[in-house]
Length: 185
Ligand code: PRP
Image 1: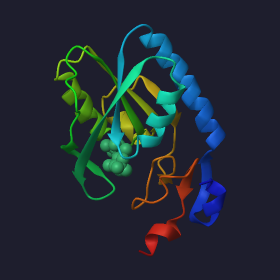
Image 2: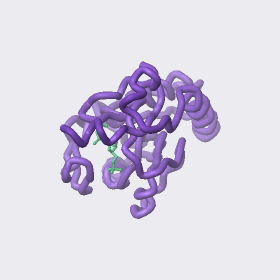
Image 3: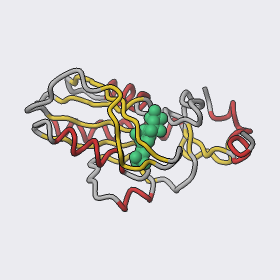
């Protein structure tokens, strides 16, 4: 679905479909240069990363494999606390493997900080992070993100995997959700 089809639910178009396509291609070229000739495992974090993973994986000219994790952060609904529970773990052992975590957004950075430590502790040869979006809050957590698509302001964004109450994930672009959508519920 296009952003224009739900224009009344948005205050702003933040990133267009074309901008996302161009950015994914740019990130893919960097990943290809860094992992040339080596088997790479992409680890997607459900559910938000589904779109980034699907587009990045198809853009890459490297032979990659994919695996998925589902985690839940305990917190007050919109704020994660850093306490993370694994709902679905990786299917495969990652000992000795080169791993790239694929995420849609880093907000507080707490989920990724925990996930990075968790995957590193399993004996992977390397664990790096690719995130399409990063909010300013993430700077408070000491987590190195090798590949960042866009630095975005601290606004409520939806689309391209990002949801509000599970909706809007199927938007082709990324927009800022209008307050009337969530204030009257
Ligand atoms: C989002 C996002 C990251 C996390 C980032 O997932 O996909 O995993 O929050 O937040 P943090 O940097 O503050 O830890 P969410 O928990 O909303 O689940 P979803 O991907 O299923 O929408």
